[in-house]
Image 1 (tube, rainbow, N blue to C red):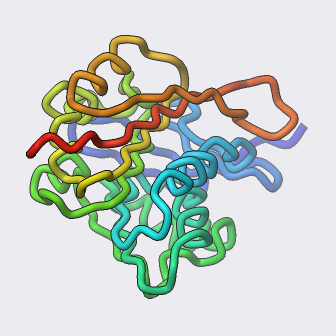
Image 2 (tube, rainbow, N blue to C red; image 1 turned 30 degrees about the horizontal axis):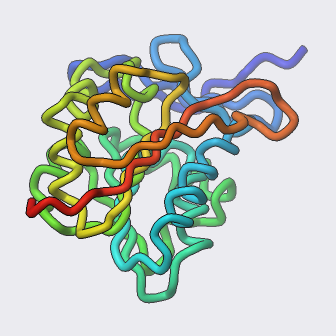
Length: 224
């Protein structure tokens, strides 16, 4: 059996050590030894974009929170118009570098698309500073509402974070949140912030029984 090969690593302030590894044709990112993402299981990341954009046809501005291995971004770019503006917010600078180099072929060099701009920093801070900016916000940060790589990510999924997402959306905007599993408390929190919420269970990988969860939240206009 082939052992995985470590390609590069990075440590974030207040968080864990990120390791980029390759096992045969599979790319893996681990955090403190635990698999955070894998190129073998990315169908739910693509579903995140697919289901959100079905609910918001022809959006002009889209925010992708968390670059990952680039699959969500690729799915967005394949579904929006040439005039759309897609912003990617990624906390780990090295992950952006890896996506421009080692991982670029996975997502067909999406970061070179002229519709795409990358913001290196905390997506929570970016959302707070972007009132009424986005038609669609896609969040695939950490392991979902239960943080794995950085405790600071819990802010994004807090009551304050969800309300910040509401304020960052335009009228009738859509918030879609990826999660490794169900979370009833988070679902109630999203509804309390003023969203109509639907919980989708999608395949982690085609042909697999494993399921991930997408919280699909449509903004209710209420004068905010």
